[in-house]
Image (cartoon, rainbow over all chains, first blue to last red):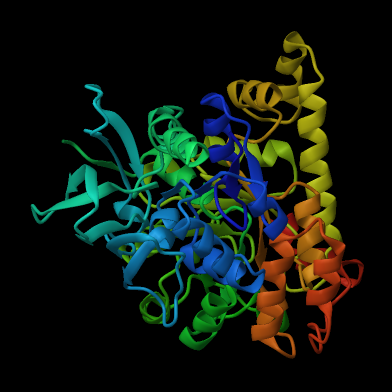
Length: 205
Length: 295
């Protein structure tokens, strides 16, 4: 399976290492030809405004939207979650996303860097162990559409529970950064439970 | 479900998210907005850019909290601010304002000529400058979560940044080629903790993100630094002391991502108008060289 990591800005290297640990051979994607050559895509952590701007200027915004709408399995962490969301709160004027996930995401929802945190959370992939999750100026999901499943939640200081991992069709998004911990369970879930089955279905069609 | 803040991982991780990006010096909310719209990954809020600090002289200190808060209100990207070397009270003030990163910076006048800030003691992460690997590792040992190579800030002359990137890179390569029993002496010589020296030798890189700073004025300068192994760049005076800041800022962002693509670099380098005038580092009298501050 050919998996790409969008490499316009952000922690590309960490996602590449995590994917290699899951037994796939990832490439970095900065150009349209590279996008065409991959079957699945990971959008890294970084600054969503920077990545969106570069994607638009280097003519990746629309092609990625098109690939997502055609069913390309895609996983986004943190900024990647924002970029996969159909709606973004606390965005800058005119901020664009690839979209595809019927969710509303709030940027920097947990606060500033001094509020960034680590926590052990339940991840609803059938596993019993908790996932150690690292949240850095992280977004959360404010609203979900009807076809979205929530895989993990976190309680904010005001006692409210917020989705921090969601899946909709072939798209997966997390507020946290599994690429920073050396635990490859989320990447494994994306590759084995989402991407591979989707590609097999695609070939059978 | 316990949530732990201020850990080494969230501090260092924050810098990982900035990789491949440009952090721009801004002195007001309008400039901050221009930087954000141009694709900056963060802004550095300060009262005077290094070129003006250099021109005006005097003691350079932490910025006015009002000014920092206005910038925080204006943008959604991370906001960094500078504290004087060793001035842990300025750092506490910046932390209380909720800045996302503190630069313990030689661009400001040092408050302590012996000690740096004990950065482990803070929730907010710190970036520190370094001219060589030993200096970088001493800063990491004090809790820095990100390193930037020092250049000669406020000059528009990239030669110092180049020299320090080559030096840090060269020393890392040298460590990687050594036998483990030679690392003790290497640690002694570079006056760095053995455990960190060993870690660098094993991994062939610093344990934290390495940006570069000082004297970067053009998209080609930014790309040069990325080619030398920088994870990203700080641009200080280079943008808002130039003829067309918005366009130059966007060009530097693109050049940082496509640093290895000469066609893109040629395209973004066109028609940028005047670059900052610049000063040759060699023409600066030694007491005015900022990169030599810090130890």
